[in-house]
Length: 149
Image 1 (cartoon, rainbow, N blue to C red):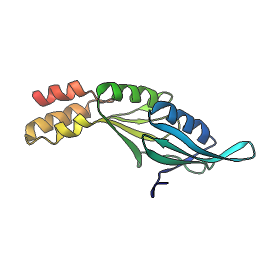
Image 2: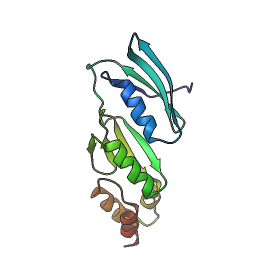
Image 3: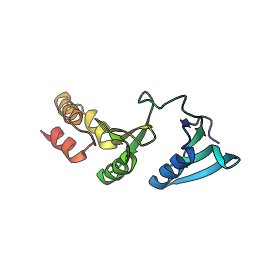
């Protein structure tokens, strides 16, 4: 087990969430499921090599955008696929953020965004930032177009 793992608190939907997340990401698996009789109490799963823990803790606590899961994407196709799958039943938000159907916040961000924002040309970086602020799902071609002027 890795030394630090995100621990996600669900209201009776931990098993559903583990199945949902592992169906979306390629290098993923459910590692363990602990049951209290017929109900799932907790479980451990892995997404792209990152281990997570899930708990059916009840309605006491809710997820908040104050903590989000950041996904570094290589291509527009990867952004598009993850955006559609993770936002299904949830809420699409601005600047590459979404909240899934369980209330977990995700940032689906192409690595091109960081590259374009970190340009030595402040004017180009500013155009990219302004373009990004107008987007929900991040569009690499539109970012590049803003960068090129």
